[in-house]
Length: 289
Ligand SMILES: Nc1ncnc2c1ncn2[C@@H]1O[C@H](COP(=O)(O)OP(=O)(O)OP(=O)(O)O)[C@@H](O)[C@H]1O
Ligand SMILES: NC(=O)c1ccc[n+]([C@@H]2O[C@H](COP(=O)(O)O)[C@@H](O)[C@H]2O)c1
Image 1 (tube, helix red, strand yellow):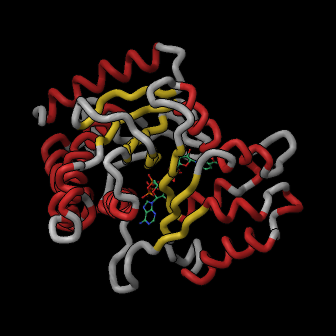
Image 2: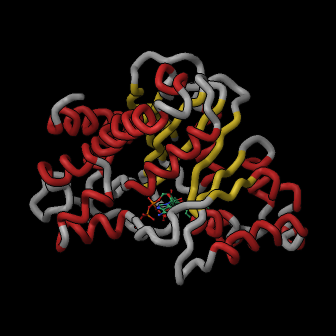
């Protein structure tokens, strides 16, 4: 692994090249660099601000469930968000942390799968560090398809949390008709694997399962969301009831006021980067407001 500052400098120039290009999607790095052709793409789209152990669980559980030597994981950073304005850390810090997270994830998979399945150790998935300018899932999926980086047709499995599923199904994002019809381009070829995220804001596990049952009953057909789409969405459990909830917000708060909590909020190399490079400090070279 390159030293932190080298990593950051590398991503600064890769990002500059991407921003200056007309491309909507680019693979900036692959870990390891050489890899067999992919047959299924798992896509974890996130702000990675910073990457957390929740992201680690989402990705590792998907990769373990669909064990296949030709599975590929894309860690996808969107440089434009559908709702949130850009805030620290800088994109180059986030990309550096994504690469460190990719190493942590591969170590986690190797360590935790040894007794369950010896072949995963040999065939740890390749992880691509990617960027897109597209904030919406329908456009991200098309940008990946059209990038020429992967053979086509190739199924994408987008890994999201329940809060993101709700926003994918919010017609406010689809002008001018404001129906669910634009999602057809996603569900005709691709799938969602959604981790439940019970909370006061998003409801209990039962409430979250009911969302999918309602779709399967045809409750969204009046908005042009056919019931068959429910078969393309897999809901999986996230944290156990007795485990604390993890989010990037919580990790950012821990940096300010409870630095010891970073141990269970983020993976080890990401923690080391946060402690050494201080990407959320007001004096960080890349801080963006
Ligand atoms: N604890 C979690 N449980 C389930 N899904 C999660 C969890 N944390 C993140 N995700 C999902 O991972 C994806 C990327 O997450 P995102 O970058 O928005 O993280 P976040 O922790 O929600 O960020 P922030 O706290 O900065 O709003 C989203 O689809 C989100 O729903
Ligand atoms: N309808 C959509 O496709 C839709 C809606 C809201 C957010 N998003 C995206 O989901 C991702 C996660 O969003 P947050 O970082 O706001 O949780 C971001 O890339 C964001 O742009 C997509």
